[in-house]
Image (cartoon, rainbow, N blue to C red; front, top):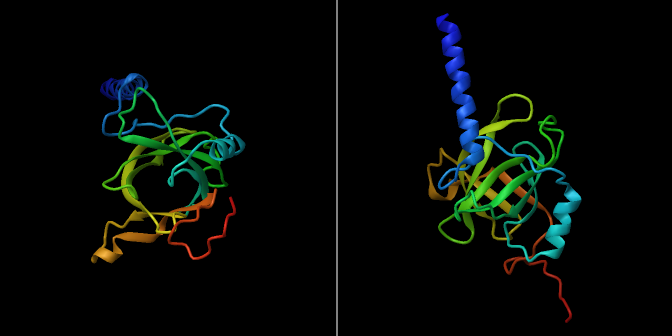
Length: 188
């Protein structure tokens, strides 16, 4: 009897936290579990990137840790504080194949300067397609604007703070920064 009571209490706590996620306002942390955007495709993401004025963080990226392709895009939602500037949406990969396209894998929040941010990534899978318990990483754009590096937690020196093996590589649209030596001349 005691075990049944404990199980019922645990289920009740899980249900109440999911209700809170649905109805809550997210001030400093993202929702405990991920959402799924219906009818989200790579084609719709590319159309947005081709037609909207985008910033350096937006585009289609490859997550170097597991080869997953994602879209990072700005978003507005009245449930979220203004510190949440972008969302990370799954596009396609063989990794976590049971997680559907359109699943929000994480969020970006403002950093100290324009080329830094905090990235919240859902790192745990509950059952089926539900991701939960996002973890926060410090991140920065590379100087050529075609990479995002996550901070390394075990850095001994300042130059080792960002781990080159962990982050994103931009796939679409490629950006040409002022630091790039391979800029093409454009005629107006």
